[in-house]
Length: 274
Image (cartoon, rainbow, N blue to C red):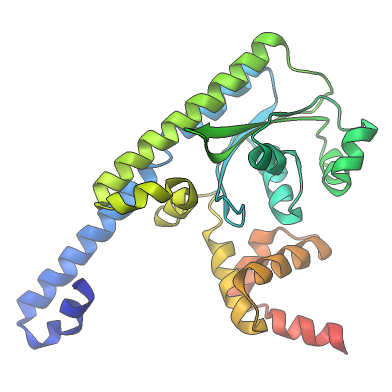
């Protein structure tokens, strides 16, 4: 209905047109504010778990059930961000397994052969950036997987009993916080029907409030790449990941180039075929 009104607004008075634009602006501002509120409190939880668990860094990422959409909500430092980015690019790692299996992944020493055999590429890359241990905890609310709490250390060693308990408490608190914020988001946007799909759509809310960690640009780039290559968006995202890894570039930088039309994956595919 709103779209129909906008389409015929030029037949009304200038004042009516300005009013419609004003209402649109207010609605957009409200939606953006609601989007931002979904992640309120997450940064404080990440900073707290670093202190209580004796780790060097932490991050919280939200995923959809298919894990195709994965947005990093907050990372305490560049290395924590790199760990999440690495798993997003590779499509493998302990954090993804923690999410899918609903099990904690406690890896006190990445040089352990069993760990290396499970995620060989991830482990090699993580060791290269100075990471020696990783601990991943699913963020689950009401049986629904929402995301994952990711912790790391630069030295090997298991979490102590109190440190482990602190991490579990923060993961549970993060789930409660995100769900509570999400319910408020739905109420503000009058989208009660979206409540049943909360776990599937949580990451999409970040598109309304893109920040330093948002991957909205990556998903936009995958859509553009899908058009360039004539393939589904999911496959295009895999192509972006592969290009990023092969060229030792972050997927965000590659996506920025695709969106800015500095990079066309169709041209790259043509070069590979010649």
